[in-house]
Length: 424
Image (cartoon, one colour):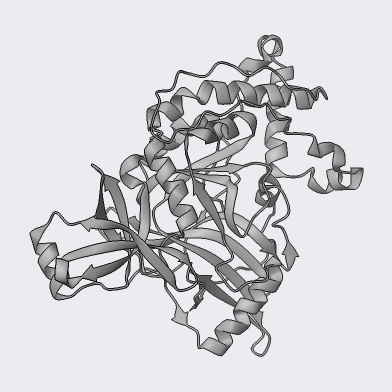
């Protein structure tokens, strides 16, 4: 699959540096790297995370990760929109307008706003392709730093009349698998995001990326060893340092010949691991470095653990029961640990670590909020959804007797928004 091109006009370097500094100030960071949060690869040890904390789950779109930055051009008194890729390169997107809600004049617009999302290519019924920007987080809103808020609180901000990428409670992951069959874009896994996690620039251990083994890939910098007629795969050690990791296996003679004639020296390629060999998937023009060695170690553990779809689904009942128990304890003001339930038996795998199940109380943070904070957040979409479900249960005699059997419906504050440009 070819990744979509990022639309827009490239900036000259001085203007780009100005925007990079602006974004860094808004996000309260002190570096000039891509400021977006990065998920970590799912491995067997992360089952305890899903069991002990409330997580949302969504499909993992196979596209180009971007931040959308909205700001004001003071000289021209107009809104400007920029897409930021993982190289931290900025593209100015024309004719993209984000007016504030309930402004019938359409003259007021959002500024100093940073939205996290993914560019994907939808395949339409007529065979054409349409570029779409899927939104899954709001980091800065009209200059207000939201990254320190919990994920569910960030989702409650009313930026514009649109929906977020569809979210489910983590124990409804099978619903996501079913919905993936009907998506118009490629989806290569699941993303689990902690309900209480702040937005973290860089690697975020509360954002978990699960992929089936065939899609669990690593990005390498390729090097051609001419005298041996082979291509080597190199990982990043930081700075300008890349070092050898493995050889690339090329099964196609035509591809081998083409690459030897025109070696893709120094380019970043994505590879998957199969039968103890690394195979080419695609070029990653959106990246300038291979995966860092620390990331490679985590991905290799994920590959070796090989948590399959069926094993994920086997854990849904435990995840659901624990979620319900935490909800009951929160509702009745009970703050204590309950005994973990027995998990389905797991087969041993290479590199798989045993972990101790620990129940954590997810709601102690509520005690630290004063009454003003409670009022500020009371209109949050997520809290309203849970409150409605609680009321349903309390008005239902059968469910009142069996609170652990009550069901919370799909959470979907959210949404997708088209970038109003089609791929040329």
